[in-house]
Length: 638
Image (cartoon, rainbow, N blue to C red; front, side):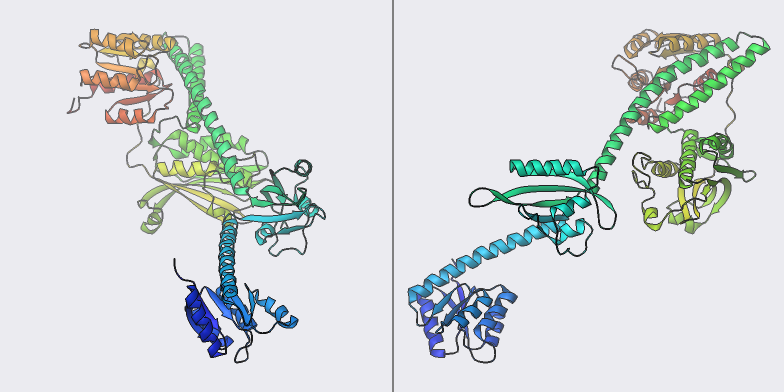
């Protein structure tokens, strides 16, 4: 154990030498001597002793009391006074330095030792307490937690600076009480707070609660308050003490998590319903197309065409539901953005309301873009609804399409390639966006709307979808004047695809053998009927195991596998395709599905060069795709 280091401050050198000798005999280490207060302060800062033995009458202008007080303030080093004076005035003044002992000269060695030991022990205890309090203060300030103490007799409260800041006061008010706290609690939360407080006082139990307060600056915040009782010598509770913490951000995160869970539930529900509806819709469309092949009269053909058009619109609606639930496959293809936007604006005109005028304009001979139709529709809808919400009193909503030649500097700012782009701009003359909101505009779950009126996912979805298409979004806004959102999409490098054939009879007759695997009986029957009518030989299976059994019997003659993605029997469409391709590499495979919840399976489809066809699709599309697959030459690895 290290010897305690002691500084001696004594103006009589003989006395100082005697004290030094005694200290050595007792096992202490004298580290220096000073005859004046100024010298004592300097040595204390330089040597940092464990204790100072201080005479009160010293050389120079500074006496021992002033020196001890300064050493304690600067260096947290305790002092013990050694003095020949015991008058009341000297003792009272010595108290100002908060000494750890007062010994009258002359003194016995045992008295000196006992005083030094008690002073060192007390100082160690106080230092441990001081450090503990410092750590507690740091923890409270770091976590923005305020501490408080309430007198149960007069309801007066002591509190920390952080407590005041939580309630919106930069400086502490002269007084604070339980009644003043209640004034800050929102009226709808106040009865429950009062009930819990009364119950805690009655039961003399610990308690905690969460409530909303209105700060001094008018802002509404969530706080967490916890308290416990302190008791007097008779065991009666006379004080409460506890903590208060601003938990607004935690509440916001909890709300976001709940909203996310709700969205996930809706997503799975939407995806499942859309999948089932897709199977029904596919069967209806196939029945209608089969009826068309029976050469009905002109009036019947017109009715059938109208019914097929309604089915196709329903299929587009389902595609939007699947995009919402993130269970659709992104299908980029050359598309006329102007035609899509023009059509959507006619529908959006009703959606934005009568008080808003929607105008659409497009440049002539606008280049096409490679895009997913459903995603582009959702981008436009989200931007228009966002603009509508910014014009609560009505206004002008302008949708424009222009061609833009993006330069190297603009492209570099978004880490994209320069060149020809199509710019979709949506402009409103609403409230505009301030700088603070602009910084978080595309942040998921961030919204400036009231609770329950927005998820904060609209613009985040827009940016995500646009980025998936190799584009970006720019925003210009002026508070009080309105905003413009500009979506930049790369122009298509290839010419537009030829229009799809729309009727069964326009597809040439086929030749070959097809294994159809579909767990929906009606859809399986209709698919087989259409294929047979077109000239194909067909084997039908309701699930993977049944399909494998048919494959083992007829593998030599089967040219193409047409299978659903998700099926009962423990074997998915991808698993079935892998087994078939492993057994006969030259066979062609088309995977179909109303939705996809297993994204890794789709990556396998790409890996094995399988063809994907979404449900529902016109029969002509299926027949055309089968013909192209059967005419395609086998890849080298096949």
